[in-house]
Every structure is written in C-alpha cells, then in structure tokens.
Amino acid sequence: LTAETHCLHQFAITRHLVAKALINQRQAMPCQIDSIDQSARPPTSSDHTGEPSPALEESPSSSTSSQACRQPIFCHWPQYGSHLEARGWAYDAVGRSLSFIGNAAFVGTAVVQLARIDAGCEPEDVKCSGRTQYAGIRPSSLLALYNVIVGLASSALLPLLGAIVDHTSVRRLIGRISAIIYCATLFPMIFLSESTWLAVAILLIISAFVGWIHSGMSFAYLPEMSDDKEVLERLNTSFAVVQYGTDVVYIIVVVAIAAAMGWVDDSLATSRVAQSINFVATTTVWVYAWWGGLMGRRAAMSPFPEGDSLLTVGFKRLYKTCVRIYKNHRALASFYPAIAFSESATQALLVIGQTYSIELLQFSSAETGIFLLILLIFSSIGCYLSPLSLHLLSPIQSNQLCLFFLGLFTAGAAGFVKDAGQKVLFYVFAIFWGACGGWKYTIERYLTCTIIPKGQDAELMGLYLFSGQVLTWLPPLVFAAMNEAGVSIRISMLSLLLFWFIAIVCLQCMGSYDKVIREANDGTDEARTESPNCERDDVVREEELGNEESKIDAADRVCEICQR
Image 1 (spheres, rainbow, N blue to C red):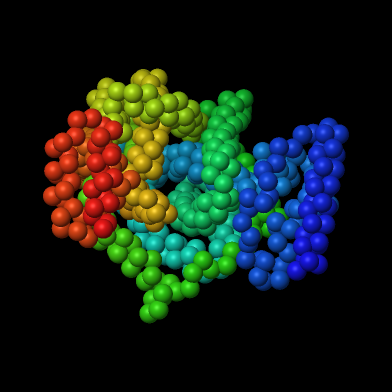
Image 2: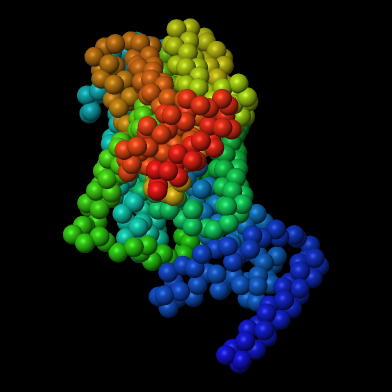
C-alpha cells in the first residue's frame, strides 16, 4: 500500500509538471487552443477490446497534443481541442447539414420541375392536372409522397435503432456503413436530367432513409461526451452554431454561383452545382470523422433482457413506458400526443410550402434555397420569443399561442399568395414561419425538461423524440391524397391547421402548469397510485393554500405522508 501511495504521489507530481509545461508551450504558440478537458470524455469500449483508446491517444503527454498547432486547421478545430469525439461529431454535423439542404432545396426542386415536364405541364401552368408517365402521380404530390415513405420507415425503425445502441457494440460500424451508402447515393444525383429524374427521386428516398439511420448512430454519441452538464451545454451550443452556419454558408455559396453564372432560373444547373459541392464536402468530412480516429467504439450498455430479441426489445420497452405514463402521469399522456401532432404538421409545412412555391409561384432551385435560408435565419431569431413570452404566459400557454400563430400565418399564405407575382409576399410569410418555428422548438424543449419527473429523464426524453417522429408521415399523406383527388393545392395546404388544432387541444388537457410542474418535481401522481389516502390529503391541504410558496410546501408534506 505504501509503494502504491508513493507511485500515485509521483504520478500526481508528474501530471502537474506536464500540465504546467503544456501551458507554457501553448502560451508560446502562435495559435491559441481553448480545449475542453479530455477527462470529461467517457472511456470507450476500445479500452476492453485491445485497441488504443482515443482518450489515451490525446492525453497531455502524447505527441498529438504537443503537435496540435502544427496540424492544418481542417484537422483541429479550436472549439474542441483534444476532445476527439466532439470534433468528429462537429464534422459529421457539417455533412448532415449539407446533405439536408442539398437534397431538399436544390435537387428536390429540380426533380419536381422535371416531373412537371414529364407530365406534359407547361412552365407557366399553375393548375397542371397531368400525371407522370412512370409513377402515374401528379408532380405536386412527389415531395409529399417522398416524405410519407421516409416518415413511415423512420417511425417503425426508431425503437430498433434504440435497441442497437443499448444492446450491441456495432454503433460505430453502422455509422460507417451508413456513411458509405449515403455518399454513394449522392454522386449519381449530380447527373440529374430529364431522363434520370425518376431514378434520382428514388435515390432521394434511399438517401433520406439511410441518412436517418446515420443520424441516429451519430446522436447516440451526443449525451455520452461528458458527465459535466456545463461542458455538454457548451458542446451542444457549438454544434448548433456549426449546423446553422453550414446551412447558411452553403446556401449563400450556391446561390452566389448560380447568380454569377446566370443560372438563377435554371434549376437543373443549380442543382448540379449544389450536389457537386454536397458530395465532395460531405464525403471528405465524414471520412475524416468516422475513419480518422475521432468516433470511438462503444460496448453494449446492457445485455438483452431474457426472452427478448433485437427486433422486439425496443417495442416492448416503448409499450411499457406508454402504459406507465398513462397510468401515473396524465399530463404527460396529453403532452406527448400534442408533440406528435404539432411536430408532424410543422415538419410537413416545409415540404408543402416548398411544393406550393414550385407549383404556384414557379420557384427555381435558387429561389427555394433563399426560402430555406430565410426560414433558418428567422428560426434562430424566433428562439428569443420563447423567453419573452414566459413573462406573460405559462409555458403551456406559450406553446399554444405559437401553434395558433403557425396556423394563422399558414392560412394567410394560402389566402393571399396566389401567383408568381407574389414571391416577395411568400418570403414575408417565410419570415413568420421561421420565427414561429424557432419559438416552438425552444418552448417545447423547455416544457419537456421541466415537466419530466425526476429520475426518468433519459427514458422520457427518448419518448419525446419518438413522439416527434411517429406521425411525420400523416400530414404529407393527407396533402397528397387531397392533391391527387383534384383539390386545390391552396386548400390542401390548409389541412395542416387540423393537426395544430388537435395539438392545442391536447395541451389544454394537460391542465394548469403549476399543477403539472408540482407533480413532476414531487412525484404526487406516482404517490397516489401507492396510497389511497394521498389524494384526499392533497385536496384538504390545497384548500388551505393561499399563495404559490405554501402550495409547494404543502405538496412536500403530502408526498411525505404518502410515502410513509
């Protein structure tokens, strides 16, 4: 024991001297590195498989840290220092952002316009009733049906991906395989033409599905990057800046190239330029992130429950969670359906709005890029509406008001924007949509974090993410069905109002925010299921309360009685 204590003492002295030398060395370097302490990074499964751990490779005493400033800036972002997985996650986020904008804004618009040509529609025909020769559908239904397929597949596979993350050690392997397949689907899209538009449309579906799997594997790394909440908050903020910054820069570069070359009205040429940049950049950053030693291996978090398999364990867990919430947390039982309906309509707004702009306003790929750029910029600004609204309203009421405005602006766009001469007015509505979108996501996440009962954060946040995906296929399906039946696209767009209205009603069913937050913090709902006298004691004490502080104190006393 004495010998081990002496060794530990010598190790502490050595570590102190190395840290001091590194500080002096970094002060002498021309570039400054604000690194996040690598000790915040959890050990990876490579510690158990015989491979060198990234945490050890990036230790202060390694040559990597001492040579950090001699590496090109592409290989070492100052925000993350020696935190390998944070750096890898940021590069992966760049690729995901590029691919989303490239496929959705530029390639998607060009595919719809080529489908219109295939259906025999004239360029200025805003009421084309023709159908494509191969698929037999209206061109205006193409993007909606694309989202129906991807939404159904993602909803069905989300529990399976959760089981893969929890019970297997193949997370990094699936991330690498999905990256290869995804980049392979991007390359043929560069050669989009009148004869290949259908094949590219199919590739868009495949790439969206594979990209969704890749995102699932990537996001599984996020909560494990640090046990320090402050470090994790800084990382999340930095990742958001990286993603939004990538989107903005990418759109500006593509639109600038299109304007310089005179291709603003040429969607085909613009999409080829955008996809060329997308393929080269995404492939480069993903190869570096997943094969450059940044994303570590992970062991299985837990073994399979007895009698379960990879295909069933996720669905069984989801079912048990839903049953427990319905029995013990009635407010959450109303909140999660509200998320499902509101999120499905909000995501569909992007697709339906893009279709609306192409069909009625004759938007080109460059103009669609500007539309998405406006949404991105003002969604960031809209995030500040959430804390402002909380000065006057409860979080539940703020969420309801936000959804009301989303419906109001959508109805206004369908009522006032009618032809290609009103593109500027459509951009104005995009400003309102973006602001409400930022407001919505901020207030929903705040509300989720405050009403989740203590000790159930991970499980119920997973259910929150699932709720946001489970119905994403339904609004596009309703829109496509109405469109295929010959209903005006302006009226079909109003179908989104029904989903936002249902979400508002579900939020209203949650009850008072004060009551919901008290139940989440004190566990009164769960206590009531254990003690039949708890509800009676709760009612007696609530009748004696006169202010908010006494409510909280009384709830604590009631909970203690019920626990005894």
